[in-house]
Image 1: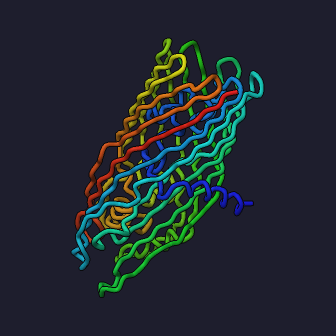
Image 2: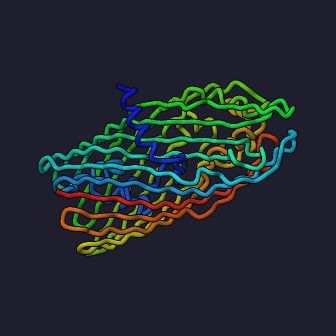
Image 3: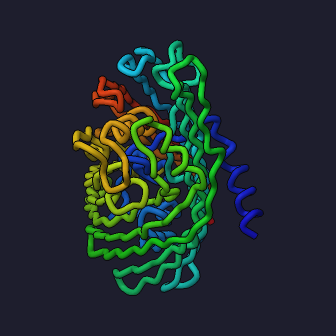
Length: 408
């Protein structure tokens, strides 16, 4: 059964030619074109069927049955400059070729009666990756990283008066592949290091609450941590530096999230605000590489009238990675330079601010289309690598989302 599910997910992930960079660390800022058009805002504002993964309690706004098909074309722009001259290698700059990917989404929600609602969905929820195989020098070590995450969920919601409660059992598929080339003997002989594609399938859950009173909606969510294991990951980290060994952790868990949100509607105008915390510091694997929790603030505005809607939004979260400068090794047996190198070269989750614009247009009474554009301005970070020299990464992002909705 697991093998069959994995094959189905692999087929869906194959829509993307490269790995998907996510914006808040390794998670997308929003699930669906409506939410992304408001920079991810959706904990206290319903977006119909696509609310299933943001706050499942808000699928109770669906009046009959709603189906949404869509996806995001994600285009990160990442470049790196690395100095390995201290250990007899190169100093050089290169652009990552992992610059485009497609992230799919399918959501369905239906009203059973005045109290019960149910849905089903499949969402690409995040990932990250770089590709330096075409770099002119070996300063980037031909580094290739590719993490992809997809979730299947069945939201179950109950509504009484203005209060809605819901739970979404989650089945998550993850795929991780890391490869790099490094001359550990300093004799000109390339040493290829690769883990192959590690895959895992694990369960989690989301819990949502929402309460609507007059023109105000408030919501709260909790998403469980999902412990993922990718065989070969720990072994691959060890030769990253000649100065240490002993890292054996193959786990790279999806972190827990907790959040609250609210929205206020006045005629055609709706303003919304979300706050959530992504708990990277408790997630296995990410804690070893010193990732910090992220406090995410999202602000969104929607103007909606008969037949169309316009949206804008802003999302901010400080980078979960930062330069490490401790002496010796951390509790995971990793030097500060190794952590800096692995984070900034292979997993540069350094973007912070995100701007969004979007809209909807009703094709007819049953069919509508949503569009969204997101942009994260360039961020530059410089750390000390494991050779005690500078490593610098520049990272910006653009994304285009489209979604087709059917109501009946």
